[in-house]
Length: 399
Image (tube, rainbow, N blue to C red; front, side, top):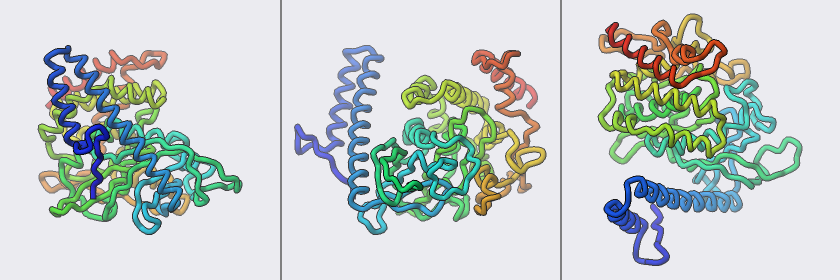
């Protein structure tokens, strides 16, 4: 049952009617103010609504933790805790402490010796995924939270102290995508998640990181989670399980193409700046987004884009990007963790011939980036843009 927020000044007005009035107000403003001013006003209203929702979510989270405590999730390689809603089996949120991330000193599972990225940055990356997604791919609401203490958290020294980490709204589900056939998933949803992964250069988009909900109409809805391994400082070894799904070879819809065209790199970079990301990571986001935009303009589908972006050799391969377990599974091989290769090892083509994705001979994003570096190794964005133009021009001529 959804809660209805009441406007304190007008008790009979719901949030929906208040939002409608704000919309009408913006229309009036557009007749009197320049478009830039209207946009600033709109952003300010959106920020106010977002901050109010965030405050309520964090307040309720701390209340539930205080009343019902936390429950350690047995899955995964880091400290992940369910925030209990009622002290039984209903969950409200998922808490991931910074000091319990894979490779961190207080990791309660201590099974991942070589994480894909240094520990300590996972929480802020989880928040970045939510803010950059803007509900396009359905990343659950995620924020930073501090001051969390609970005896069930990991305290190797025995001394209890307040912890900081990411808090994500819990989503009811029937399991993850690795537990069922990929043919059940909607093309549009696979595309939306794929676009998010390309932009953020996800190093670990395994099927286990996609929750599945079953709707009342019988359709399955995908929810992307676990974004601790996005936004790396180097563009190599991206991993996408959806690359092995036939949905990735279907053409993008008009709605998805329009979304990609509207992506505003400057706004995305501002989000990373506010979160305190390093300059190189902001540059990488611009690199991946520019490539995504250029690729769709030139008619590439998600499979072609994903194959090109993840063309660096994956762990365990000898000559290319064949069907191998994802990076986290490979890293855990020596620690007794199960190794899975996702939902499928091949992607059926239109002719029925199985094709293993990742033919690296066609080139790679890494190569384009390298072409834009000076002799001294300094990256030049203008040169990268020229490299993109040359690459797609040559690809068009060769076809």
